[in-house]
Length: 320
Length: 320
Image 1 (cartoon, rainbow over the protein chains, first blue to last red):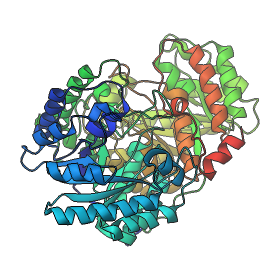
Image 2 (image 1 turned 180 degrees about the vertical axis):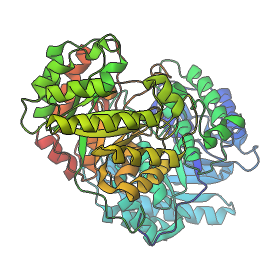
Image 3 (image 1 turned 45 degrees about the vertical axis):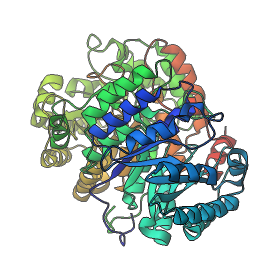
């Protein structure tokens, strides 16, 4: 951490993305009622930001076909920021109609990955964000727009993705009208040193408009990368309960950073999340029941909370 | 990282402790021939520091009863630093007789843990180190003495362990004649913030005589803790191939930091280890065959090296 930065924050937000990034990657289709139960329990545990689904055609992602219904439930929970992923202006139209609090527009900094997954070049996605911004402004809705820059640390198709290109696209998204941006290690290539380097440069360019970090735990570095980003001033992190999500290129390998492990690490570090980790562990058990047969991840559920733990963890247990 | 410290080092040593800390915690007794094969392959992969066993009574740890024979093999490998754990002066006598390069004397900063596991108070262990030092000096041998301060981040029996007590015992070990010391999170209670705090204080007190960090991955923070210690100036880390070792208090939970994952992270960060991670992955597969039925850990063996990876990882693959 360069000495000219502020000391890292004492509070952080863990955004649950299991209902979108997690569920879209696994075969099991979770019934709407269970998704609603998940959101209610996560809210009761203290989570205040949840990505509830994605407005993509149901034939592409049948697991998320009920996003409008799930979003309608989430909107009933006071103070919950309910976000959805929207890949294009059609998705944005639905997000605005349904009154999402936040829409996340994915961009892949890897041109090869962008063409393969989004069928657009990165700059065509930037142009789409400009159209989405115009649509939002015309709608009178207050739905925020977050541009999510994926494959920010490399790409399985293209290999290296230049830092300068990641930073250029991040700034271009803001210039096109995104309210804020995030950086994602879509395929698990990041390490703490590359995270420190890129996030420090990105923060120097756009400050707090860089609003979130999204890491995968593919090669065991998820929490180390969170720590490096937190040192660089990031205070919002995506995570999936039970680490669901997987890695499409390595069957059985870990996917997203595990929510309950991340909350435990932050609380243990003295960084308040407002989330009761004991309640999360109970929710994990319920979700694991719905996902029987799927590969789950995480360590805390197995190791348990520390026995005779130091004060920080004792406080966690006491709030259960 | 406080701005008055040097930038973290560009080289680090990964010390293999799987043959001692790993094997002592699992039921399978690995035959001597396999241990010798393991050491030779680890050496061929570039590992230059290996803890080969423990001089404790064979009835207590039958898995390590062949330590003298395994050490004799290790001593044939030029430039390999072969260490053994010695719990007391009897063990030290054997380590000196057999010509170990380094003997590691464990001390538990938790009084409760010390009494339960070592049947001595921490200060009685310090006194034993003074006797071991006198014995070493009288022997004419050059075997180094490392005092390993365990439960440095808390204890399942006692709960909190005061930082001041950890630091006091660390200095006392050096004053008693240890050539160097290490700090160990024996039960997986550390987090990156507590690691940064304790290692910075410890380094300020004793500098490079704090020679190693030993972390467990019990709650998924092993690599994050390594990163925090590396930022504080530590350049030697203990690890176990395939993450063997387990946690005695949580069956199935992860044990030590996984060697191959740690080497990959460091190399990816641009920190040279001298170790060929592809060769380690091949060795892991062989060791996994010997440990059939045991719970193994780690992520890299499953996710694989990155495809189309960035330059650092490409170099790793090219050395295979």
